[in-house]
Length: 113
Length: 112
Image (cartoon, rainbow over all chains, first blue to last red; front, side, top):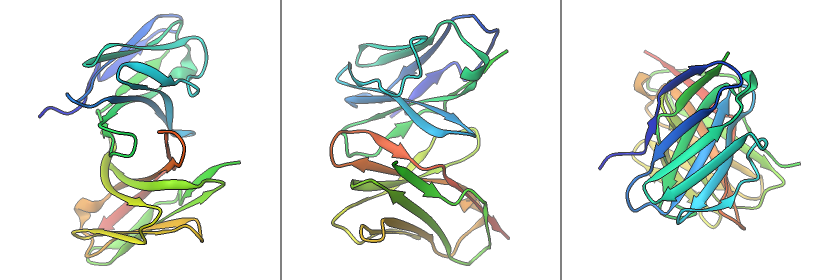
């Protein structure tokens, strides 16, 4: 079975541009999580969905960030407009339950110039 | 404030020895704790889960302990190998809600 698939793996863009990160969770997983990882702050939960419904977005930094899950097999994280401080590795993860292990994708390394 | 603390300094050990990594938490009442391994350029990979009513969990060369009195979990790798070199992350789940909160991770280097 394929794991969590994220695209693109790398993204370099200029500040002010819109950035869209994509995630395909493992089939059958009801929970989907978006994380951001930096050296300074470690791995931070941004938002998570249960059955395609956003449950907690308290980790989203500001209104420039938005996430959607239009169906069980696809989610996006959008940053508009992007800023250099958004540079980080963004991970998507999925799981079958709140207390079950999370399966992570290999992340998108985002660089905002 | 809530904190999950892992030793930010790298742990260097000799092949064959037991590696012990520490995860301390403050102002949490975790329902359970998970340990993950992360290799450079990759996402974290789940290793073990231990619940608050469990003292110890084992999987092959891995052992996790959970002491809710000390507010601490220890992660042991016995007979360590260079292939065990990676960053190891602990993560807590609170009793209420589904959110997983990660520690900063500890980098383990096993030298041949």
